[in-house]
Image (cartoon, rainbow, N blue to C red; front, side):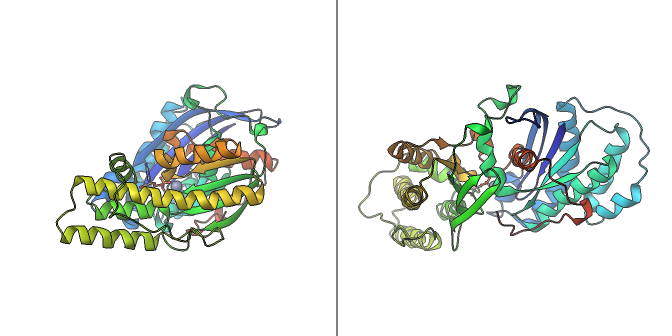
Length: 395
Ligand code: KG4
Ligand code: ZN
């Protein structure tokens, strides 16, 4: 079975194609035939964050060339002149995506129906206009190729991203053995849009035990970066500056809600405290390179301490057998190393995604969808016309 997965929830347009094996057995697996991502970062930089209408337009522009590239990578691109019979149907599906429509027709009329058996698409959470482009694109393809669509939760994708082996692109079996995992596993999801502690009782069985009441960790990183004059997305820049940071008596930031005794997070106050600190230094004209590094370091420490404290509490309370850290911020080396120490203290495995899979991608969507499809015994797939994008979709 060949599966095509699509991801457009935020500022990355991504398509992946996998070829499954052993789907009827205890240890299902797949080979990655193609995995491509187009990042819109340079376009959103000017705005200091992701601008939804722009993201939608860029996805519409990128999807067709990305599909063509993906089919070529997977050796599924075969030229021919097909007459598209059910044109009105998908014309209707794509009526809100005029920018996509013409390129779509052009490509589809020039290729033979590829050997793709199912489509998986992120239908939330994320920016609604961005999600809709991917969902409508998936629905139109499904109509033309007469194949089913499985909607996938983006956060479940981040969790599933840890299941890919090192060097997954070169492996016949790209997936780790999913029977090797012992549950419950705790999952800390840290991205630009989310900060959640999720109890994973089994693949596909999740409970959010706590989340942020205001900003997400990645969002706080991005905002602090902006205050320090760094480009979007600021997370990687703050963590790079932090490497040169030193302990500095006059630079202290709060650890919000660290002793709240529950699993809620709050990063908005930390962001404001950082702003005051920066404003004071600017007034004194002492915001130099060293101070910038010191603030970055202190900010990273503050965030990490809060994340560690809450995670540690959950490890104990739920007697977890492993810890997953996923989402864009899991690329942060200081955070990852701090969790590595925590896990060795508790003698539990730490599961981190490959660096390339920390940010948004379609392979994680294919993986999450694949596991669900396998676990639920080839779940009955909802009718294509009923699939919708849900911006605030919950796990
Ligand atoms: O998961 P992701 O790619 O997109 C969302 O679904 O949000 O996460 C992007 C977020 C951004 O806020 C970015 O600044 C942050 O992940 N990020 C980092 C690092 N790399 C990416 N934050 C801190 N340190 C990093 N090294
Ligand atoms: Zn994400």
